[in-house]
Amino acid sequence: MGEHLIRKGNAVSGSDYQLLDFGKGRKLERFGNMILDRPSPPAEPFSVQQPAAFWSRANGTFRRSAGLKGSWRWRLSPAPQSWELKTGHFSLLLKPTEVGHLGIFPEQHANWDWIHAQTAAFLKKRTAFRVLNLFAYTGGSTLAAASALYEAGKRAEDAEFFFVSHVDSAKNIVQWGRGNAELSGLQEAPIRWIAEDALKFVERELKRGRKYDAVILDPPSYGHGTRGEVWKLDQHLPILLKACAALIAESPAFVLLTAHSPGLDARGLGRMLREYFPGNFRSEGGAMSLRSETGRILPSGETARIVWEN
Image (cartoon, rainbow, N blue to C red; front, side, top):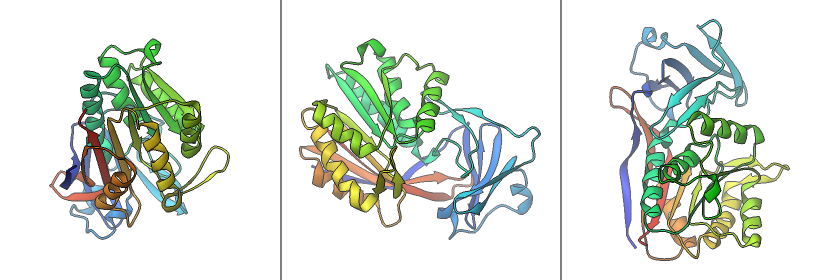
């Protein structure tokens, strides 16, 4: 059982997304043809590198007014309601929200490539492959796995043995994910769309006797389920990991755990995975990050992943 630390992080690059500059708690990004100026807590300790005139290129600026909520100010008329961003194996519909989010966390791009590659590799040697994506948001990780299934010829009618379960507690976000699948031409891919509390869903799957091969988790520090269930990372993540280990015990393939919570680093996440998931696997982890066009690195979370050699 070996551990590899990805010391330089998973820096995103690509023609459809670019981190232009960051500092003083904000970041300037390009999503397709749209340049946006948004809050970024990890950018607080840094100084901006580009002059104010460079930042004034932003088509839209988000300012917080109460807690996480705020408002957008646009230099475009009419203000954009949504636009498409291509990410490699799939596309995402971006929409400006009241909390400044867009429906994508670009620092996850390297993980999406990894999920696609791992799924494609295991499909060549498995007679069934079932992926569980918890806290799935708008479906980036779901579509990474589903696109590999689809490219291998797996369709909705094959969902007894080959499928991705997309689980998020917000119904509107699950619907957003469905739209992303359609946008990506993956509406016939074997995806199960589920609006449910993550822990309750896993416990219910265990009672049903359903089995999985891979688990993807991107848990928040704090949140609520569909019926007001309270999620606290330090309290509930160990319980969830133990339950997920039982789900994949018969045929484990891979687990990916990411976090944006202060105090949780890649080594800590890796220790948790090794504690709850037994067997002979290789593990690796590191910082998720974004690289600016001048080469500066903006830390954007932590990741740990394990892969079984079978």
